[in-house]
Length: 274
Image (tube, rainbow, N blue to C red; front, side, top):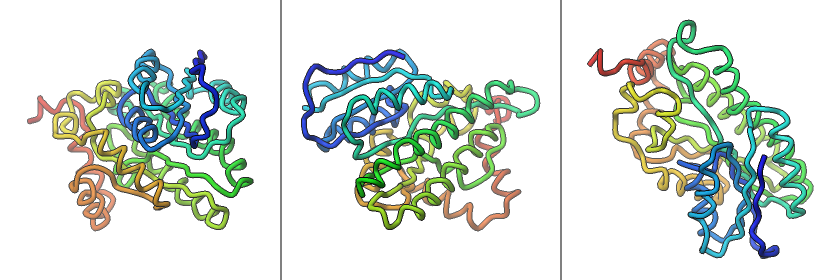
């Protein structure tokens, strides 16, 4: 883990922790938080973190970066130790880091890839929520944004563990929101649809129909998430209207039909079958 902190002292601005902040929706979330008066603690594992920090310079925000591997218990604990050592309470947290894997579950995806996905998408979120929330409850204030997905609303063949992880996060966010309803702390689930990020390349999904289709702007998704968080909403289906239509339509279909529709978008080899 590597850390860097601007030399400026505490600014008196509210502070947010954003995970998965080096690219995509996470970087845009960091940008919208900074534009709305927050100081930032950003974390990611990749080398893009320094570039993300540089891109956020000059807007008046104090930016601290912590490079950490959230797929491991020790990596999450080292991140939390770095946050706690700062001595400033977190006013908001965006638990956004996530990865995907694509292919036939029994033939294409190594076990270690599925387990790493569960570690990042599920374990790290629960782990950080367990560390973050007690302090917020004690202060009687705080906001938590958890990046779920429209994929949470239906089975996801060919990225089965990814869709299942997002279903877990959707349920988890709503459950702890209920538990915290009288504490002054809110939890909001952010549900993007397909978004123009490097997710599809990293997940090995370049040859799927969903990867080839039009996608949402991550900046728009981030704005939707930030506005819902600040309004204290329980969830937001972010991006274009097609995402809301997809979620609404899925509720009307039996599980098998939902799985079939989803599979048509995520099955590898879209070019060969088109």
